[in-house]
Length: 223
Image 1 (cartoon, rainbow, N blue to C red):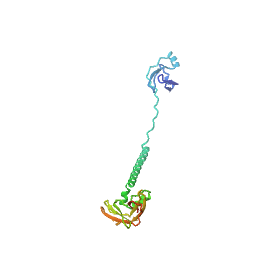
Image 2: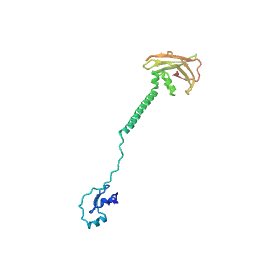
Image 3: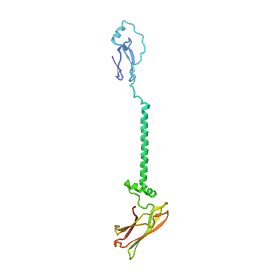
Image 4: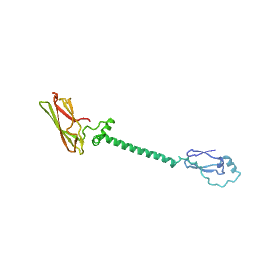
């Protein structure tokens, strides 16, 4: 038979024989905890007229078994996930370190080429503009002078670094008032190597300089 809680209307399927008591039965709802007296069925009441009532006794409430919760994950199944997560963390750290090293090498390529000139080939292979020619060297006191024979240009090359530097060739260009290049020439340096703090003097000339040239630009030529 169906037993319904008068408070929360929760329905229970119970055995009718459990309620066949001469005095009925006190039951408790397992859902809301409400307690009420359930009278016996009619046929039991009729038997009360001819049979002495049974001694009352306290009956246990009708309990609904709790729903089973999720089973805990065995430790043997959790460990592979933890190891996999730790492995990805290690991979992420390694990738971050490599990316930082590559970025530092790109930013400081001028210093890298200065210490290791052969590295310029690797930068060129990667499509990166290498360090400008003559890293650690400076050009100073550039002075053009017009003479009857042409235009004489001279100046100094200074090693401002703390190590010995190879001196590349020089590119000497003439420019017009609009700073457009009109002529240029490549010359060999007066020396192939300069020690720390050393200075060397260069001098070259244009026999037939462009009459429109009003300026001079001296740079280190690419190797």
